[in-house]
Length: 94
Image (cartoon, rainbow, N blue to C red):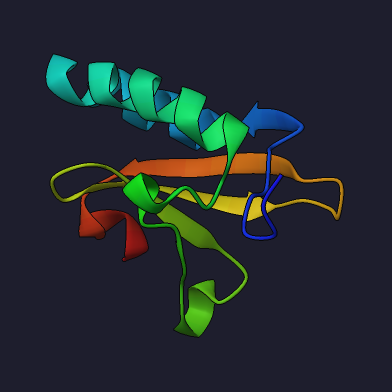
């Protein structure tokens, strides 16, 4: 494993995330399912463009699903358990 790799041990889906995903167009849902597998193998895989958020969301991270659609998440511990908070365009940060 490379130093920049960070496999995710387990994922928890918030009720907000589940509701938001349900409202997404099918192309976003399909893209999420593809990117979720990549994310599980390496949360920092370059294709995901994973980045830490700023300001009031400084404890959160995001990765790109497709186009302007992002998943907001939080690392829950050092073992790399992750909580998915929301999915959507930049509106999710408001």
